[in-house]
Amino acid sequence: MSKGSTALPPRTGSRQPAKPKKQKPRKKRSVLKTFFGLLFALLLIVAVGLAYLVFKADNAVDQISAPADTEVVIPAGESVKEKAVAMLLMGIDARSHGGGLNTDVMMVAVFNPNSKSATVVTIPRDSNIDVDGYRARKANSFYADFYMNALNEKKLKKEAAYADAKQEVRNVMSELFGIDIKYSAVINFQGFADVVDALGGVEVDVDMRMKYKDSADGTNIDLEEGVQVLSGDKALDFVRYRKSNNGKNMSSDFERNARQSQVVGALTDKMKSFDGVTKIGSVIEAVGANLTMDMPSKEIKNMMTTYLGMSREDITFIPLEGTWRSPYVYLDDTKLDEARAALQGKLAE
Image (cartoon, rainbow, N blue to C red; front, top):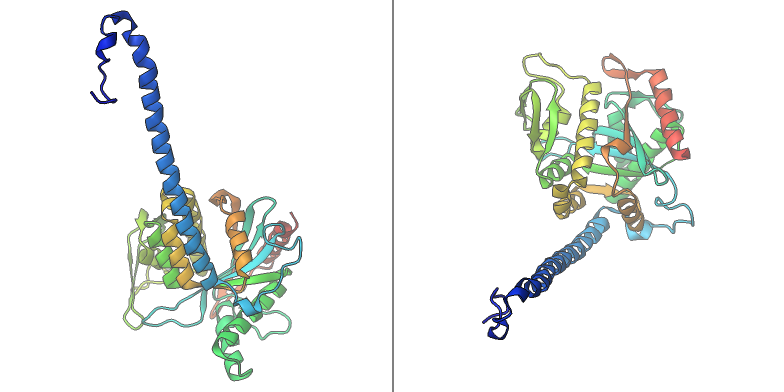
């Protein structure tokens, strides 16, 4: 008879009262074996999964980080895992049917490793930005203008021109907010959509009926009002929506910024969920293919490990506000001062 049988061997058959006492420890050992067997299998799966993710993360980090020949040694105490850092985040409309280098999404963020928290200021794309040393223009045109200048006037090659443009936009935003913005990140809109899809969609509250079609660049936005789970393309439509073809349900830059913050917060929370953790490999692939940063690869890994557990509650979103007078948004000085103080305060925590 097999070990797994519940019957006892014949030699103990005459000692009926002892049966329960002898079965209990064997049953307990069997349950423990099953439990530890499953635990071991689970740990093995996790270990293999982590090794797989580390490999993919390394590849992704190599793709998105600064070229090796431009990396510098980070002095002791200056790493992002030890010291607060300010970053410029830009989203570019790089669709196959149109778009260009205009940064329709612009955010300045400060991450602090002591409090494991961040402050993010969203900048309306049409903001009139006027700082010392630079010609005043719309916020979303700086990157494209600097890139073309680097190509045509400075005679830089393509990759060097991109790097020069990011540096110049960092300089502008550093001057605007009175902080040292050390790094920048550029993600194209397809990357945003791919990350949302990799996580199985994102739940948001669509604040109005959104319907707009433009055959010239392939835009076809059609969203009903209300709470719903959006795919990557639909989430992109949600954060980009500005107007309808019939002139109704128009949307301001300020409302767009609020939607961007809502989606970023929802994605942050979803990444922390069990379902999100199981899909992190796909997220890494999506990010690696669509994001570039002028940060050394080691520092990117430090960012990943330092802020891995951050949730929506740890991020303070501050949308800049102002007055629309075509073709610009003129920022409210009081709100701008509050944003400056918040970013400077987060750096000093």
